[in-house]
Image 1: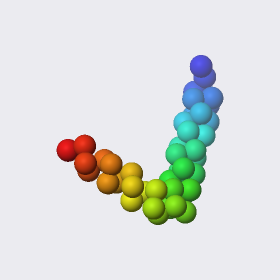
Image 2: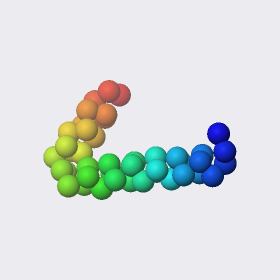
Image 3: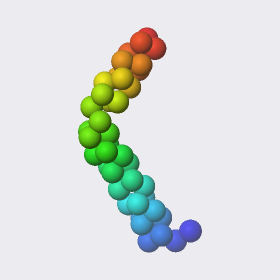
Length: 42
């Protein structure tokens, strides 16, 4: 795989993660539930 293709795939993956984070902020109840589930594991 060429270097420019790897760079674009990395950028696309980062943009996807960033979009998911922004979408998660639209549903604070989901984030609160997820945080509670995470802390109850310990």
